[in-house]
Image: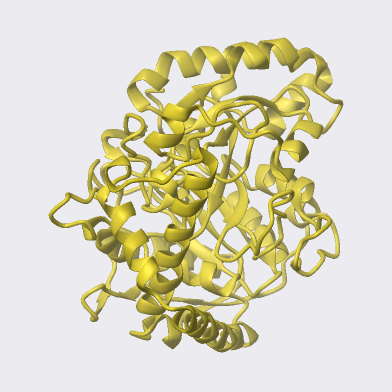
Length: 475
């Protein structure tokens, strides 16, 4: 098998058995990046010389010598410039002084970092097409986007540049690109993975990876999960390693499924036929595995209040990010240095009063309790990850005369993902279906808070029944 076909666990096994050296894996991955990245635009900051200089001295961890990429947003790599998809930071060559907890954990496990991947500006839209860098293209069809905001990471893994890559998720940014690029993407429970050493509440964002296999995702979550000093709270402790769930017998589960969703114009509509077909296919597969599967909608996900309440939190977070950007730069950020959507959301965020912001969180917490009640009656909920097949490049851009266009398009494209950022519950996207054009169509499974174990166990069962088929063969 070609190295590009192997997941991170298989590549680590090559090192353990002496079938390959860390330098051979690193050189092969760099060669693939140099060959395919000019067309696909996944990697924005190469770290090839650092990787070659340090790979042979990688720690004797479970992934010693395995190449990985880090998304250029969220997690920090000490001494390596970080732009967060923005032109001001790119031009300033701002460099974080420390590795974040996630990066330090990956290094201790033996991973070798080859570079940073593309993202949308400040991670706002489900695409990796910022003004700061060329757009990241979908390896299944380069006229289409790779999703986002972790689109560079997903593209790189789908194209076989690396077997696994860092990603994070504040509204779907792990699951959306995983769906669009035919990968497995698990968003852990809120605060499962610490943001250490950075202050603050985890809020909507969860850190993890996109991967070619369930076992890689489980193994990395074992490395990352747990509380760090100063964390305001943490997710419930797992009872055993997540990798143990890969082979654990699964009881019969009660699984609900739905494909209808609210649209930004206030109505309720069904997903694209390809996405409906993907859900129906998965429902039949789950039933064949012995689970009880039936239609079941969560009424709260159709509540017309959800979108404005969530956007209240989102707008304020964008305003906060602009302020953080100004702090890093040591000066004010101006309107013309960021994209029209970013500036518009930031300005809207500054118009929201403190009581309105607090009321939005209170409403979300109340809805969280109602949705949690659903998971006392059902073990899992199955939906499309996104509502349409991979969309053309530029779908989420906002022109100056219509600065909110991108976020409106995003709302119609990914209504199933953001609800689990708001509630903090874990959810994953699985690559179990391709449409007639060969494009990947992911499905989402969600579970109760703290139940990544149930998601991993069921995802592994599905992967065993229908092995994930990565079809981006031209790469």
